[in-house]
Image (tube, rainbow, N blue to C red):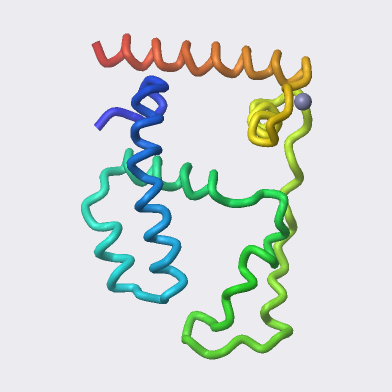
Length: 143
Ligand SMILES: [Zn+2]
């Protein structure tokens, strides 16, 4: 199976669309603590599909929410014992948002329905060129 980075934009989009319902079902299965259901749901996926699933799941995460809020629904530990309030406070250093002038910031502008700033537009142009060059190199090495 070809590397995901070698897929063209259309194929990546199709892969992402295919993984959206899987991501939604997986989120429900994880919340229901249905490990059998999780196993069934994930059985048979290719590495490429797992990559697509990871990207879709990451895309569904509201990055402006603190991690403690995102995991606030977890009220038990790995042995199914109820968490004490103190342990529920997940101590995770939140990852700072990427500054303007990066692909991530460009994507953030777009997802916020903002016009990307000049620094982000330039960074995105360079990023897309790099991605295109990588795809070309992958195609040439596969040929
Ligand atoms: Zn910007």
